Length: 303
Ligand SMILES: [Zn+2]
Image (tube, rainbow, N blue to C red; front, side, top):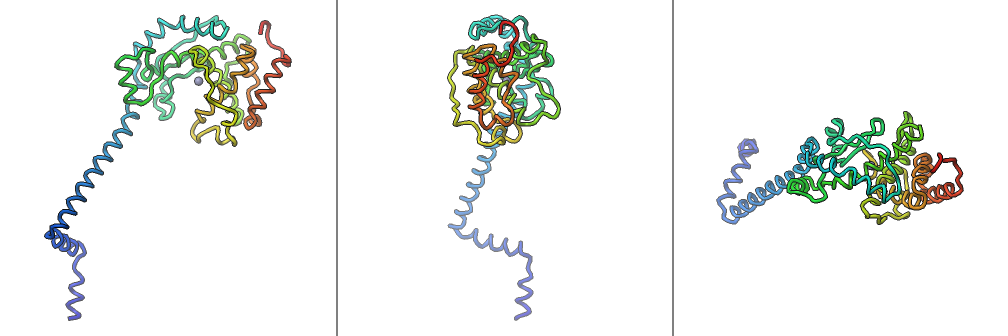
């Protein structure tokens, strides 16, 4: 008997499982349970499929849209650029003597970079050029295509807002060149991350100021209590912390430009926060305002 039991027990596992399955499936309540499990599994599979479709569609759409040049956006910009600049000159009390070159797609290397392709626009100081991601931009009065783009990507920007922002970058670079200084924002090999963050904070803060002042949406939702407590929190690992750099940047530069206009912009450009200022930005802001009032540094005639 012992020998037989040993032999019995050497049946392949799959055979035993199958026998068990056949035995159980004769039982009605077990049959019902199996059907329920199958339906649940099918439901889970459909759910997972939908989830991945919803997750993947915006990414695929954004990839396609950032390779698409929207002629209507180009037409809108060509027709309205002078009016947009005139409105900005009046709102900010500035004057543009020259115009930027504008392209209606991001540079190729940005279009194929998974993170960079999300940018609505970009300014390159070395070529005085604004790049608009026209496929992802919408008209101030959106048409059906814009609404579809918004639905599929979950994100589109109003071309007018984006242009007002990028013009802010262009104006700073233009000011710098007017003063026979180099392109701005400047970067140089070996620049520390902390110093680069300081420049980015001022650069995006000024561009946000141009956008918000021109569109009349000047509210400042950032407060001093929102500043990061560590240098690491100024970035997210791969890129800067957008909330801090854009909203915080605006919060930082607003009182300075409100009070000092172009002189304030120049001081910010040439005395941006250094690494050691990043954890005490309210103090940096206060000291800079005081220095401008005391005319600590000589500015070019008329500024
Ligand atoms: Zn910007």
